[in-house]
Image (cartoon, rainbow, N blue to C red; front, top):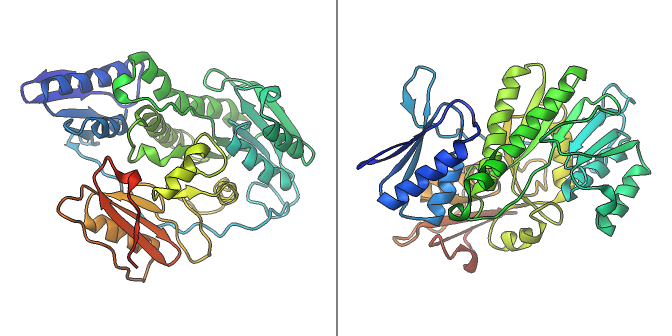
Length: 406
């Protein structure tokens, strides 16, 4: 970390390492104390998501992220968003043509980390219906699950061969009970702590856990024929909100780790699916209903598990990284991929709202309210044939009602 009268510079390396949390938090604190800009420079380590979350907590904090290019020239790296049309999910799984299957009629072995969580069990139910063998890995014991989750697990066990292992996949992975060719990494931790209250040790633990677990799982399963991986990330890694700093950083590092594994294992399909909140299941289930009313897209569980099933199939074309959120009710409705929550967006200018409309409704012109002189954030939500947009200050977004404009 370097500091002077003109600002604070934090330099990290090509990947996140032990001690980086203390350096980055120290840079944030020093920039705030001196009221100077903060610049993060790295060659792939990451950390920009934490700066965005910190800027949401302290509007006076001025931050930028610079990524060193291949030719040693420092340049900002902004994501390139493209429209991608997901295949239409099938209403029911077919064992003979299921994307997670091997040859026709032969079930595949699928490992699910976080397999006893709400999303893990929803996905297990879908794959069990097609007869695939399931290896559910989770830190919690099955006996300690709530009654509803135990009933769901019991239903899965009656439909297919299921092995449940209580294990912390960030540390080690036991021997697989049968050949595993598909992996869904859905394990994670949601800790909503302001950046200002995060200790160095807390951030260190949160930051590397999810990415480290992915590498541990792939290292253990790859030699035995692992062919496809879907890593569950979050759209918070792209544009985090207040309190989501540690969570956003963990998912940013997960995305970067998946990219490294893709290079190390060119014959293996590794897809990073960055989701919005899932409704009714998962860590954010309690907040999903409120988020939906506030204009954020939420993922219906039935739709989410069908899309996951399709992303597992290396024979289908799919992006290496995709931001996902909201239902896809008709085959001709594309899923928006934009800097913000999939299906809705936090846009800083009117042009970004127009781009959202174009992505979600190709070929259709929709009116929306222009940004006013006092509007700091414009929010847009696409629902059916209507586009809702509204503007507000960054602190009162959840108290405003969207207006129908199209």
